[in-house]
Image (cartoon, rainbow, N blue to C red; front, side, top):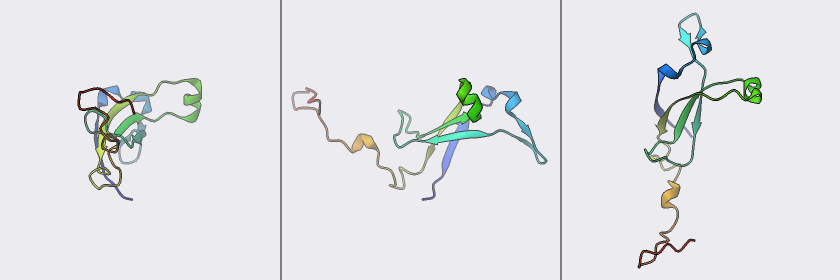
Length: 98
């Protein structure tokens, strides 16, 4: 199951101490969370600055960098859960609650 993720990050949120100097450039480790549901902007990817297991245990806050969208929904691999449920509105506009 191959899919593409397109996104953007706010580089002003990157902690400079997290940048890693390599032989060919300056790098940042990041984590991308791909969710099954789309948000209000039709995005299903959140991008954060990576933290270590030890930092997570100490309660170090996760730095949110940006978001994006995968092509999984367009390829039909994931159905939008909003459309998987029947309309629960009665003809008079009352929500049926199920």
